[in-house]
Length: 369
Ligand SMILES: *Cc1c(COP(=O)(O)O)cnc(C)c1O
Image (tube, rainbow, N blue to C red; front, top):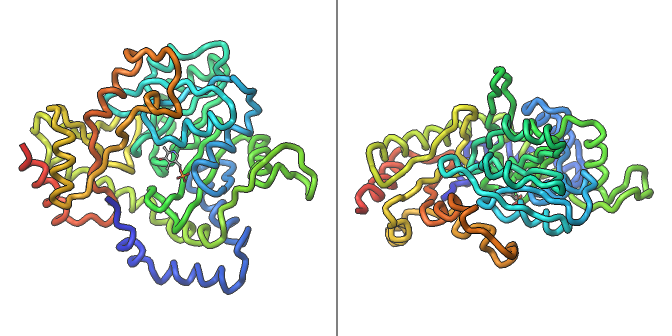
């Protein structure tokens, strides 16, 4: 599904030197590389504050911790995402309210969101799934109307941009109250281990977030709130600082692979290619098809047999998972996620896909009737 080795070999010299520098100086924690990467990422995103942390799940958890929510407060998020998004809501004893997604973009359904807001709702966590932004303009409007926080889960969409009706263009993760991301190796900007970051334009929130990542400590050995230990280590920061200038070209490589796939499947009635919404760019963390003839599982098995990597993201809706099931679920509220889990299949997507590989993958899929 991903080829991280080819990407490394292309920039090996720079990467190796940057890692060696950290080891040479033995500044493993909070070295100058962390500050440098933090500033460069803030500049790239055009956001006031970047707070690095240990991974994308921590980033979400710390973001929610900084908002001083009370147990039982409701946080609305999508039914169709990686579990981390809903897991942290539960862990903090908040009440996750799962809502349906759009069938075409796989992102938060605005109609479902509107219906889910109650007097207990305090925050919305839209996920920019598979590489394109959720409909932030509508989400931010309704958040303002009901005085809700918005935390953008940008783990899959770093570098995507969103265009507002007035023409303003913003990067994914910088539009809401707080944005979070992951630098897991296979993400669009991946390190060589675990890493994550939190973004905000709010000075007070940035201060709170930074303290929480460091045990709730704002003055040496004085603990004002209960925090966590969540750091991006210097070696990962050094690697990310080398890779950041390549992010846009990496995303372009993903877009050209997606274009190849789109062209190949054009005219194929039972294959729906990814829909890119008019207000967002798509940086294709995943290239995900919908197979509408009921043969998705058979195609999945056939490709596996023929050594063509592919994956089902996601095979089970969160509202049906043991850990996140609630009583009195109304299945009609999840028409789209219930359909998507039966139809989706993701194809190999990374920055080093060659034409011959793309030809083979698409040929195998088109051959399968
Ligand atoms: C990867 C991912 C996360 C979690 O990131 P980690 O760094 O693995 O903790 C959260 N949300 C989404 C949507 C993701 O894809």
